[in-house]
Amino acid sequence: MRDAASTRFHVMAKPIGPICNLNCSYCYYLSKKDLFGSHEEWQMSNSLLERFIRQYIGSQNGGLVNFSWQGGEPTLLGLDFFRDVVRLEKMYCPPTKQISNDLQTNGTLLDEEWCKFLRENRFLVGLSIDGPEELHNEYRLDKQGRGTFQKIVSAGKLMQQHGVEFNTLSVVNRKNSEKPLEVYRFLRDELGSKYMQFIPIVEPKDFTSVAPQHWDKEKMPILGDERARPGNDESIVTDWSVEPEGYGDFLCVIFDEWVRNDVGEVFVPLFDCALSLWMGMDSSACYFADTCGKALAFEHDGSVYSCDHYVYPEYRLGNIKEKSLAKMLYSEQQVKFGLDKTDSLPGYCRECEVSFACNGECPKNRFILTPGGEPGLNYLCSGLRKYFNHIDPAMRLMAKELKAGRTADNVMKYFKKQSNDQTVPIVSTPKPKAKLNAKCPCGSGRKYKKCCYENDMQISK
Ligand code: SF4
Ligand code: SF4
Image (cartoon, rainbow, N blue to C red; front, side, top):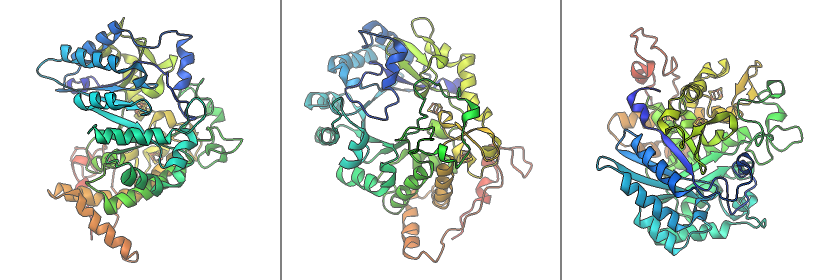
């Protein structure tokens, strides 16, 4: 955590706090209004914005500095706010660095002027959409309770017309998780999305008042218990939270469609991340990394939190008016937060055959008991385990192709063939002999992933 490379960190900026023009049922951020009290002014001040941009650029030691603008709904701030952002970024960016910007939006306020600005300044836009109309409108509603689908699709078309680079972010919930192919094919074929993020919605019913890791262990349900599933009176999660196994099934079905048809054409960060893990590299997504703590959340009033999912008083690190971002990143509190991800893993995860890829997923979702009664197991465990085991043969094949200097899309012909002849398994499934980061069983003293892993995992066809 403290080495030089670690100064590459990420901040999710929320210049309008939790304020949004929509009222999505599952939003985990609208309720943060209570945290900040009754404000009149949610817009980040110019002086704070300038301080943040200067500090953030100055504290990164990499050549590329990425700004992420989120909310709430950041477009509520208007174009002039973002013109100011670009002006300040140019003012404080030294010739040795490059700036990139991304903006997560519900798309409802985007018009021609916005699109021209986003195109000219090369913003990457993340558009929130949960699938075709019926599925999207289930939870993504405006303040009057009306569906927002048509507006979002229009925003997607407008961005395409103006050449704005955008990707889609779909929240995987209890409803749309039952229709994975409809969701994927809609995004690919009708919206033209080439880059799809899927985020599972997992919310304990008391998430607005109880911070993660502060749950009552006595009340945690055990893996497989009805209380650890949504949609019943005893459940400890909200009705819209995804079913644990349903999440796994959703990913498996989409993966099968992708691996037969779309490798190299459609990018699903979850699959890219898995591929890097199967190649023995680090996770590109914090969810599956063995530590976290390098993705801070920066609020409209200058306060900084351990993570976007940890905006609770218990995880407040300070305010950039009083402390630098770097100081907060390297504080004892934040270093512990990052290391706890592995340190708090239950034995059940440590013994798990896919822990090298899963790492217990995000700690905010670790609120159930293992079959042996140990607390801290991930609510999504059954789905994650299913998904990682399911993609294992394809991942090993793709990793092998890449290591041989060929392209990963060769995998498509194997799996198309396999789907035509289900009786002939074309890929055998050897298992790793140790954890990837553990010492290699051969006694070399090196990490297993850097030593015998590749030989052990040779794909046979
Ligand atoms: S707490 Fe979860 S979302 Fe936050 S950095 Fe860690 S893994 Fe990522
Ligand atoms: S699949 Fe389940 S047991 Fe395995 S590492 Fe992930 S959360 Fe732990």
